[in-house]
Image 1: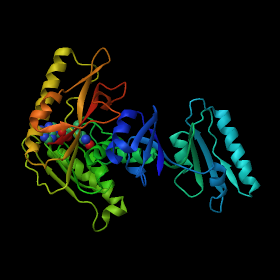
Image 2 (image 1 turned 180 degrees about the horizontal axis):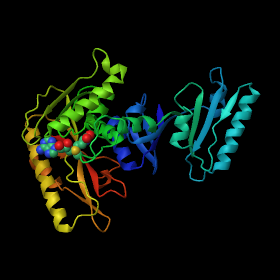
Image 3 (image 1 turned 90 degrees about the horizontal axis):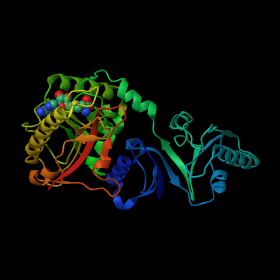
Length: 377
Ligand SMILES: C[S@@+](CC[C@H](N)C(=O)[O-])C[C@H]1O[C@@H](n2cnc3c(N)ncnc32)[C@H](O)[C@@H]1O
């Protein structure tokens, strides 16, 4: 089956995530914000970088619509084609509604307003792609698909903001980015243990557990281990499937990532956001920047050396590392590419994303996150 994926705010990172889950040969970018994926199914709720997924249909849309199961139909259209416009999209929606009415079907159209594309909030609010007969037609040029889901912004916000233990100083890794890191590390494997050696308040561990992996978190700070425990107890208490026998396991203990000995049982994947340094409100002066980069590099390389002796060859590490905004607006991170080989790792290469493309940032951010993905040789 072929799926049309609508990519997120950082499309290159979204593409790298899809390549990691499905392998590069199954992913084809067809527009800046769109990609095709060949797969049996799409585990949409586990993908952090894509906004919407639609299964392409290989029959005329009229035939598809006339064969929907009995009951009322809720219908919306998103047209991502280059020359799409809201009026044409609405006219098309009316045409399908009239056609269905002639077949005595009751249809409610979801208005697309001033855009040919329904917003994620509209699609989600109307449960398009999530419930029987709640249909969103997704179009791009010659491609027509039926949505299988839109990113659940409300659930992400809840998982982020309602957690009992939060810490602005440690930074708040968005759950979507945590999912992306887990996917970059697990490359499609559905079971195993995710180790986060800089676990902080536990966002990566939380997302890993929700995705069905066991999770192992360590952090230098006892307070952070306590925060992670509180947050993970909270997510377990509100998620029935995590309370059942056979549910993913959680291990937490304090430890310095540069010297800790983890109790690792295979298979393991490492997904982590290393220490980003102090939050900054303005770009650091060049001399300060050099110092921050040097400190981060020492931490990262010492950690990589320490863990290298404890993991199997082939283990993948997806790491968010700091990258600082300069006064000219460019970003400058921790350059470890030259050292990777010496440390016993290869950097993973993606078809659609270079190393520099894996910068996760917002314009107003001084400390951005450079994602690096390594594999132990
Ligand atoms: C950017 S935060 C990680 C935040 C985390 N992703 C979360 O969900 O809250 C980095 C963490 O690294 C920890 N840390 C700093 N130096 C460390 C070291 N040498 N070993 C282990 N943890 C360390 C800090 O205590 C902090 O919690």
